[in-house]
Length: 272
Ligand SMILES: [Ca+2]
Ligand SMILES: [Ca+2]
Ligand SMILES: [Ca+2]
Ligand SMILES: [Ca+2]
Figure 1 (cartoon, rainbow, N blue to C red):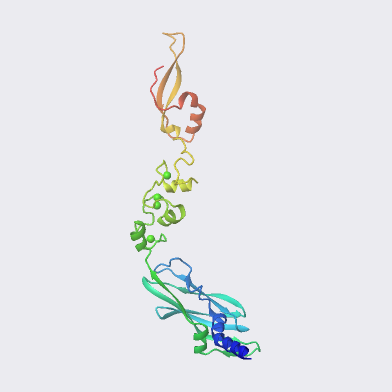
Figure 2 (cartoon, protein in one colour):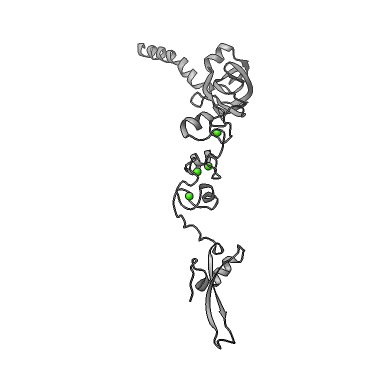
C-alpha cells in the first residue's frame, strides 16, 4: 500500500513535466530559421518554425513573429492531434543585430469529448513558451551571396565587386562551389582561366585536364610548297618553300589538317 501511494505521488510529481514536454507548442529543437543562410540586409526571407500538437484532438493557434520585440508578421495554423506543422512569415531584415522571436498569441483546442476551449495566456506560456533566434545581419553590397564584412575579414575579396578577379565566376561560386581562388583568375596556373575552364567542362583545379586544345593553325606561319619553273632557263620544274601567314578563317583548321604533313609546322624559314 505504502509503495503504491509512493508510486502515485511520484507519478503526480513528475506529471507536469511530462505534460509540458509532450503536449502542444514549438518544436524547440527546430527553433526559428530562415530561407536564406545567412539573410542579408534588405533581402526578404521566409522565417520558419514548427508547431506540434500531442495533446488535443485539434489545435488552432495564431503565432506572432517579432524582431527585437516588434511584431512583423503572424500566421494561424491548424494542427491535428499528434502532428506537427511548419509555419512561416516573411521578414525583410535590416543591418545589425536582431533577435527574432515566435510566440503563441491565441490557441483554441478541441478535447477528446469534442469540446472547444480557448487556452489562457498562462496556459500558452506554460505549454508553448516563446522561442527565439539571435542573428547579426550584414550587407551584401555586390549581391554575390557573401556579406561585406565576411568578404573583407575572411576572404579578402572585394565587397563591391561580385567577381573580384574578373575570371567570369563570382566570389561565392569560386569559394563554395568550385573551390577555386576568388582572387586569382587562373587558380591552377595552366593555359585557361577559371571561368573558361568551368564553361568548357574542365577542372579549374587541375592543370592539363584535359590538355588545352592546340592553338589555331592560322595563328602560326605556315610553310607552303609551291611549284615554280622557267621555260627559258630550265626545262625542269623546281620546288621551293616559302613562308606565309594565313588569315584567320573558319577554313583554317581544315586547311591545316589537310596540308598538315607539309605545311602546318611551326614557323621556320626553309630554303630547300
Ligand atoms: Ca558580397
Ligand atoms: Ca572570380
Ligand atoms: Ca578565380
Ligand atoms: Ca586554369
